[in-house]
Amino acid sequence: MGEIEVKYWQEEEERMPVAERKVFQLERLQTTVNRAYRKVDFYRKTFDELGLKPDVISELSDISKLPFTNKSDLRENYPYGMFAVPLRDIVRIHSSSGTTGKPTVVGYTKNDLDNWNNLVARVMTAGGVTKDDIVHISFTYGLFTGGFGLHYGAETIGASVIPVSSGNTQRQINIMQDYKSSTLVATPSYALHIAETMENMGIKKEELSLKYALLGSEPWGDKIRNEIQERLGVIASDNYGLSELMGPGISGECCAQDGLHINEDFFYPEIIDPLTLKPLPEGEYGELVLTTLKREGMPLLRYRTRDVTRIYREDCVCGRTLIKMEKPQGRTDDMLIINGVNVFPSQVEEALSKVQGVSPHYMIFVRKKGALDAMEIKVEVTENIFFDEMKKQRKLVDDLTSQFQKILLMKPKVTLVSSQTLERFEGKAKRVVDER
Image (cartoon, rainbow, N blue to C red; front, side, top):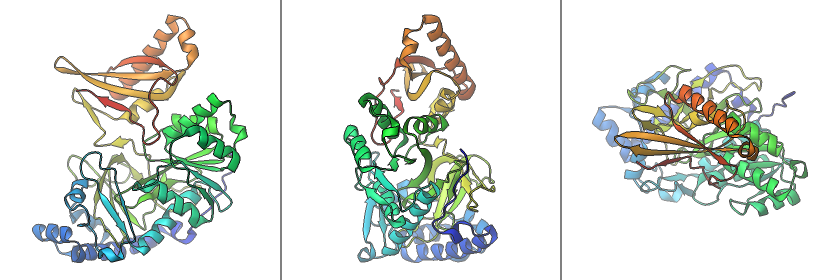
């Protein structure tokens, strides 16, 4: 990728020596635990039931003595039970979609919003964005944190923002052409959909001014990244956030595209074994758990994200000393258990990346076949495959089946479908249809 131009938004914080940052983290953790105990009934009750006092934290590793917070705790305290300040001090309210029950509600004080804007500005700057960019935001605006989070982060940098929101893809492409958008903010699946629509409209990537794509909100791998970069002519970086903890701005890739830097001066990360709930050492895969370190409106202790990843420290060419997380492989609650085998959708994508002639678009169908589970994976392939003789199609199915068998440890039925026959999504892509 040639020479990487390194930019920072808050250089002192992003490049602080690790030992110095740990002192900060401990002070902030102690303050957060105290505030949560004093100001949030849920935490006070939980601590009292466990016989815990806020002064249990004398070093960072003591965090493992604290209870976890789950999404269900937020739902049970709906809407404002987790707030640590009176409602008059809350200046913004967001919430999750609530597709699986009551939504989770989050509140921000004025300071929380300022911090959020700066953290998103860090992630966007790491991804290449500067005040000279024109940022085209294709996330839905509203209670979802993604649209507003990246909007205000970009404005904080001083970039020009086009709040297009989602939908009407042809209009989006016309706006990108006419307004000279240089940065696209979207889900990876929508970025691919934009690329496909451009091709159908006969518009070449050279007719746009795009340089960067900041993509998040769903798991995606290098096959999708390479395709987006190739078809849109951008540097595509991943960023990670959760509405419950703030929204986007928790972590993001720099232009080296080698792991996401976690803003660990604001979020203390741990990895736990999702079954035993015991902390795992750096470098091991497990569930990401995050504790807010400077949040006023709604401090959260050891929030279980359900995302499966690992965290690790290594020198990065960008000079940031922040700990890194790998792109999440999937979620513990997205995990499919098929005849006793754990399968993540991201493993399907990994298998696809190893076979020539297939696109990154796929759907997983799980059904009952008698007493057993049966799994079918539909994969889009390039048009010319269907004009090839059956032998080539058969070989492609065999190659895919053997890759799936190797990576998933089971043998699914593989069905090839022609290009653009699987459903496209403007929000998060839905990859699994479980019909059991």
